[in-house]
Length: 142
Length: 142
Image: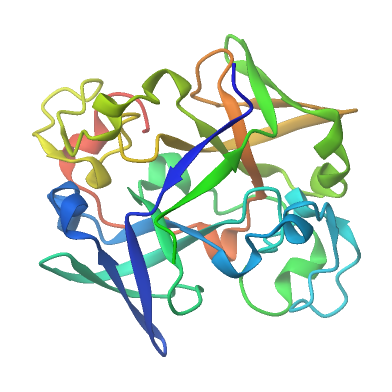
């Protein structure tokens, strides 16, 4: 089996302060049908500014936005520097118009490529009492 | 900006019935440090059996494991056939030994490549009352 594969960008992020527009490229737009029946979605995006060899070889980080956080492995953090610079963010879906979604809570830079959209399903995705270390309570959610 | 990028596999799945072993390749193993402070993790994996042009051009699906589900856009489903065949599964982390994690609840085929591991953080990831359509209650969680 190959050790690599190809990722295709399906859209892009436009920041509007607390809200964001997620614009899906026209050729993928049909894939959004029925998504308006979900109140929340998981957005997978690409930290394009970290897509370089140095950042992709980073394996330990100090989560900078979290005061008091110790150095941890990248897989124990949501750092954008990681072997595959994929961001995962659960957001509220405000509305869909044509190929554009208006969402609330997306922590992505302007122009970030979108790589996947998934419906948020609480019975699979919601673990309210999951245990986390103390440092995750300080700073932004991720 | 390019419309594509390169995905690198960081490990592989070994199924053990309800439990799974997630084996991280030795060169990425340091990235797991500190992950044992989290009870749950999000695993991003690659549906390698769907990594072909036909499946990657699929934009509408009938979620087969969900009796009564209508045809929906792929982004309104967790179908493995999608432009980027990425699977997302929240699992319980039982233990980590060397470069191998024992997890509970991973819905991935034997041999699936792993592409990322993220700590599950309820204040970012848990939305217990998210609204979903009726069909998602039937069949498996995703």
